[in-house]
Image (cartoon, rainbow, N blue to C red; front, side, top):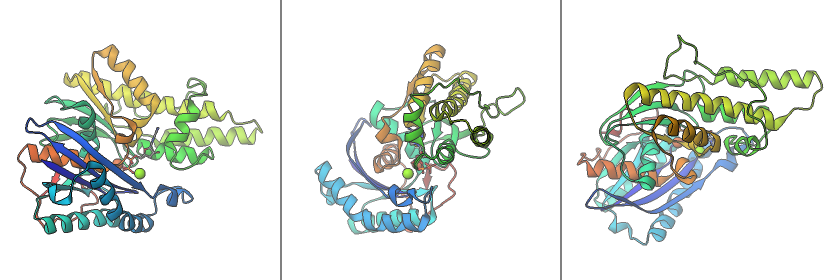
Length: 347
Ligand code: ATP
Ligand code: MG
Ligand code: FE
């Protein structure tokens, strides 16, 4: 069966096509993404109206390219999955409206799915099915969560989340402080490779003995970087940019991987998936690999293209729902901008 996935929750218009085999195996046929990121760069963040308009313009061409690359016709598609939330209301509306139109015109079932479950499902396109019980560290532009995943189509429970900024948001804000371009993840990751991560001891949020074991906090870290930059400017020192980037990145990677491994140990779980746009970070995946190896945990991180927003991950979670025999969503499916991670499908 062919599952087509449509993503439009933020600034990426994605259409992906996945083949679901009789044994439940997933085969990735195409994954086309059109990004409006450059249009937002000068604002230092996504402008919702600009994103919605860009989705509207990109939807049909992206759909055409995806079908062409997969070498299939629209009429070959057996089910359509679309991001119903969480995300920007206007942006989600474009994808959901398109998906409803395609599903109605083709007479095929429609599945309104959770974008965050999609991020985790992306890994199954690369590394095959997940064990019945695993832990996911979901780190993206809007979220940072530790999730207990007991079947991607069945049960996702939030163990902890950020109490302030998301990890990706911290990268974007710190990049701004350092005069680096938006989005801040890739340039900080690159610059940090030439710096010393131990140069500056930036704070590790919520790691005290009385703090919540699974929650994160990154706003104190961001403020600490801002103070450090201010102080060195006042003193007339030249800012050791690479060391600041590396030390910031070290603080983020240290807390994320420490808490993820701790949760695995607490719950007796032996598989950790790192997912979301920030999972593309070289130090986060590197440190996670070291710490998981020490703890005997199997680490799974999708390749960078599958970490960022894309349509294939939406097709993947749709395929898991189809394989599990889930009922389709109603034809009058609506968007849910604040959809909680535990709601894998909007019914
Ligand atoms: P959400 O998934 O929470 O709705 P989103 O879809 O906007 O938010 P993603 O597209 O999953 O977020 O991820 C984008 C974020 O990933 C941005 O904040 C970006 O800076 C960050 N990012 C991308 N590459 C890297 C990297 N190599 N290192 C760190 N962060 C990165
Ligand atoms: Mg994006
Ligand atoms: Fe995302």
